[in-house]
Length: 385
Image (cartoon, rainbow, N blue to C red; front, side):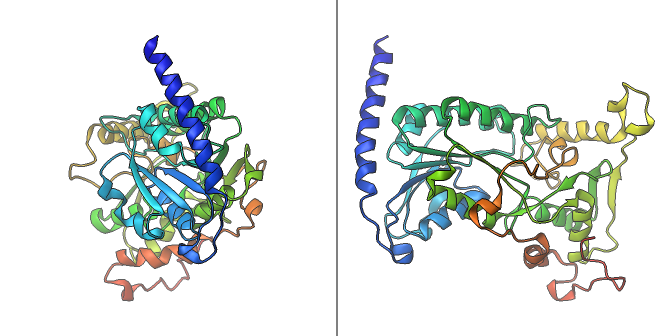
């Protein structure tokens, strides 16, 4: 009982001190690029991920003091320090299961952005630990210390009834955040592409290294891939506009493609015309009722998930499978398309960029014969249909 009382006292004192610092932090605004002062302090959790780097850069370039919370080594955040003026990018350690460490990184902030969403199973965190437990702890601590605003990044296809465990956990994470912090803003991006993505780059690596791209089912599920910089710009807009608090946004790209069309696009752009795309067939429609799970593609997904869950990511071996490592259903069995019922990029006056405008610039590194040997076939292929 004594320890509980001390903890409550510590939380109360931190909240009071943080509130005073926040009032002081928003009193002065200075314009001038990265040397400006926006008047806000923002904590970014999950800052070392692909999206996190872009978000930190968007905030740092307008003079926002950014607390970059990391769980590994401080060296993992060194490249982020260049994204703001001297002293404006502040690395601080935290752990998703340690409320006190979370409190230290969020207590001085006006806005907290949770980008944590581990896509690989590790010894310390499974899908539940990374996407539900950590999200729950962050939201609870933010409410305890009096953080004014919270932005939680989920996934467009998140659904508690999804065939994908990762997507179920993302939906549960949203519920956990809303339970503690009802006024939190939820951002649901579609599958993200960009220079550092594990989507188009991974397809290209399979073509380049293994000479084949394995896929499951007919791959006719629909995807609206979205550019990482567009998502980061939307998050930046939310940070500086409190009118978005409590809302849920679906951020999807301007075009809808099937997964197979995207795989074909990467194959053409990397000049791998003769490299085959091998799909384990979906025979669900031909099987008796109740035996759909015995379709070859379901069996291969189970084998693949078992292999990748058992094989540590740090060990050499075959390139990672497409989608979430150890959860192939996330990519091969779900549509990633905006419902149209929730606001999207139009709320931020952002016009999303399509995949064909950006992807060839970084896929050129995988072109067979070198980037200057990227000749498309004479039948006009290489464009999306």
